[in-house]
Image (cartoon, rainbow, N blue to C red):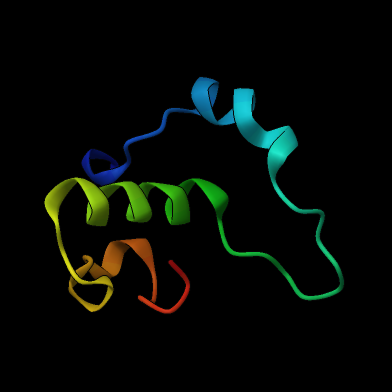
Length: 60
């Protein structure tokens, strides 16, 4: 599964301050969600065609 992630921890830490603060409901894994978004955009896919390793397509 690690080959599917576009962001390493160092890059994620650089942009983490831009993420919204959690408000009661547990947030999805930011690294997984952002990597899924990047994967969909780079490959010209529909959201529903994203690999399930990134989580539900409605989360992306």
